[in-house]
Image (cartoon, rainbow, N blue to C red; front, side, top):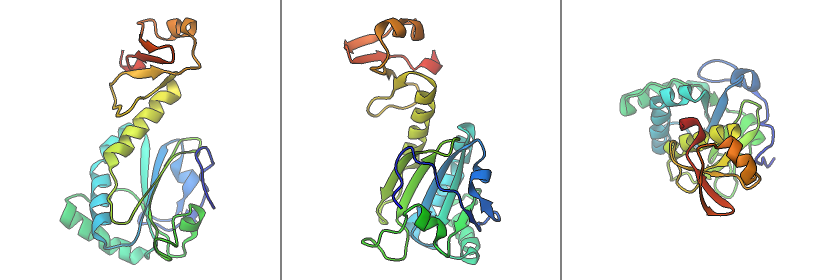
Length: 212
């Protein structure tokens, strides 16, 4: 099953390190970052899980819940959590799905046979409170994810959902934004009374609306 942006994130029930997860109910009205790992006790994944645990305050202030997945059994997850604490200095503080039957992996197309016939690739899904998929990224097994970038995308999505702006290349929270082309100059005067810098008729830079 190939999932695309704007699709409803499939619901599921699966065991995790925090008990059985009914996904849509668990997500509630939060944003969700769902990300998969090739296997337990692997070095890159260990660093990733430690980093997501460390970043929990950043996710919390954005109303985001993180949830990981590996195809290994729950007993291995619990043992792995000790290694994460020991080597990364952060205790696992979000659920890690035990997808031993590959139910969730198959729903979200996380197993790519040309990469590995049994293990999940490093998939990332950002899902909004309406359960719509807003971002997908697939990393190779050898490359650890950049969770600073994932937070940056969440900042952009939450900003652009609330205002008639888009975010330019390399944007980070607080930088200038772009007034979307569908907004006329007359409309822009009402929406952005502080004015804007018109580089071209289609490229109008404005201070970030929720920072002014």
